[in-house]
Length: 267
Image (cartoon, rainbow, N blue to C red; front, side):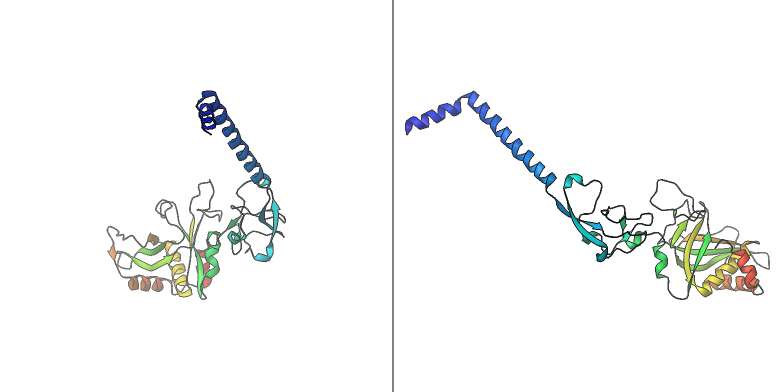
């Protein structure tokens, strides 16, 4: 027994022996790792796919999804491996998902991320309005959907004084579009210039804004301001919202619908 132990110690103390053992261990590790990777690459995994053509802006339901097994080595791109990340979401506005296609992360989005999704829940009695803006009046394109604004009105009254005040408060911006009707903050690499901020207001407020816009064709200004900002105008008399509203209504009481429509043809 002692002779056996002595022989083993001599064997292990030999530098060549240690080197050989180290090399064999490395080969074994590489072999096991290689076989593991090969198995992972060829072992099929279960993935969802579209069992029908899914048009853009479509709510994806469970019946639109089937499953197949595919070797991972065949899977390319940012595919979605779990149906729980697909069901209840929408196909992107610019994407048709073909029948038989896997689902990819850029083709499936949340409803809130759809352009114009804000317009699907407008309360009854509210009207959508396209309010004209510029890069300057949007504070360098810093008015975003979900922000709130106040509309200020500035005009010369009958006494020659320049009056200034808040006409409408706390209007939520639903969208911002450029002159071609494209979403300014859409996820593209293209810089777009704001031409309209879009919001929805009760019909009486909508009519009031249209009348105020008519007066801007003459000698008045309607100014959007973030509701976090407080502004003042030099050489003006600041008046209440009620006074501004009364002024607008008094100057437009004889206007008919045709004139108002002509003055708001940007809608």
